[in-house]
Length: 347
Ligand code: NCD
Ligand code: ZN
Image (tube, rainbow, N blue to C red; front, top):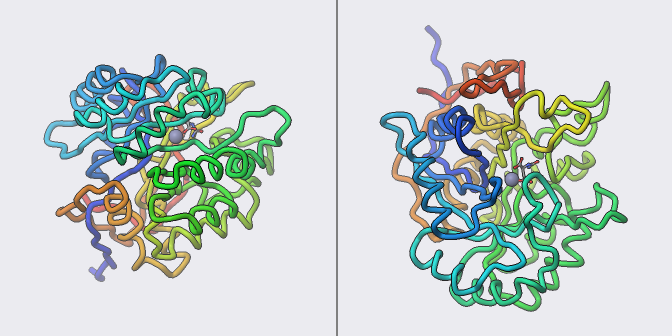
């Protein structure tokens, strides 16, 4: 048998993940736990996770849904609302119930109906977070109906994020799932307290993948994929070696029929082949040597957590992505459905 090329890196973490709850949680979690040592768990359940008690109960349900023998740590987050209380948020952080708080502008995306209607309303919370070093995770899109959906991230930087960081320059901030050159430039030119996650889909696809040859609901997520020049900027940032950019899949499972519908919901389920998907990008960019930094080192450094002492190995013998995945009774179409990816995570 000929030798198969392999790549061994420290075990990665996923710094932005939706695992849902109940039966779907049970059906999707193992895909993440197999690859990643830790994941930042998004709080946009219905109702959202807004208190330390909610987060502890959700964490227990996640741990209860892990396959036997899995070694995986969920890192919980708190969903900010207009009425979030600075003392409660700080207590949740200091007790270890949350590692961060998530800002969803109200109605920006799936599960954001209870989000913040104006950042002025959470000014006290943000000041406290800056004072105690608690990270703010930001869904960076404006929701003003007059702003074109393809411009919503860039306008958010101008209208909300830049002014916020001017006022609170030490606030530890993760600009989540960035999709534009403007976001890359903003993060690059900000201080070391500002980082960003990048998803596999925004490295692989541009907006044509949603709209050419018929509507492609399984390529629809928020923020939506943008023009090709933005995808190229994201690839450059992810593979640059800059510690500001790190892995966050934004894997967002939805039942197939909820996506293939007259009002298909936003979210791409990329968890099953996430590391393979990133590896494909890094190989195409001639930057496989940068994969470990992006996937396994930059995130822990940003969050002030230890890097993993474990490793994972990718083999260059191919992974076939199924057309559909049965998530404990719910059919979900994964990212790269029906494709073959060059690298495969070894068992
Ligand atoms: C996410 C979801 O489905 O929860 N959807 C998405 O398109 N990314 C929410 C989010 O992160 O915006
Ligand atoms: Zn998300």
